[in-house]
Length: 264
Image 1 (tube, rainbow, N blue to C red):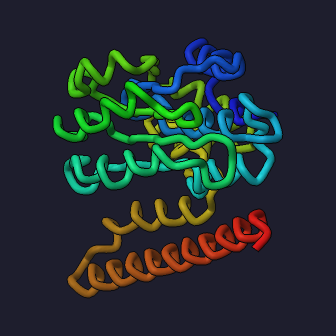
Image 2: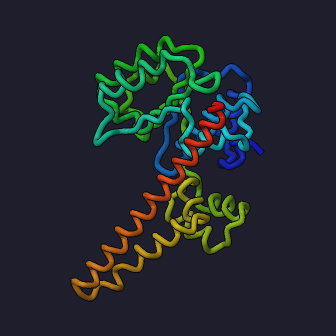
């Protein structure tokens, strides 16, 4: 088992896997594709393959490093996401460029995953350009985008471009059933997720996610009065608070695991 096993095994993903396994992978990547094409999952698999010490350039999928990368909790994998409608130049100057010049915190490499890269405004893209032109040898950049034309040509020319397609619904169903989901859950998850494998897995296997979806779908049928609406809103808020507390608990566990891994 490796980090690649959980992905759709199309030729494009296999090509990325082979390039990284060769040890001669590009340092800057641009993954293009619509929602449901698996850009996020592929980027995390790439990061794990680059950083995993148990199976370097492969990603074992079993060690603490791979697990924390999958949960977006590894200190050497930096996720840059839009804050509001865009990724401003200050984010690149303050959160990316200085960190890119530092040594990795835990492993031998660090990875920056820039989600919705088309939301970088032009000054932000220009600020990133020099770092992409002269990256540190231990640093990789993975840009994700649904809108190629919104990424400056100068950025595109510095990246290895990979075009991903949405995973067909039938293929999502097949993968979920192979992982143990029953047919009905797999079909619903595939349809609702629009080909997004990560979202489909949450819908098919995470009991809390399924319960929240059932609760949401049941709201319209309960709204016969203002009191019903208030009750439904209160239940949704309570559920959100419980989810938040569970997330905090998971973060504390992960921080403790990291401290133990660092010998603290």
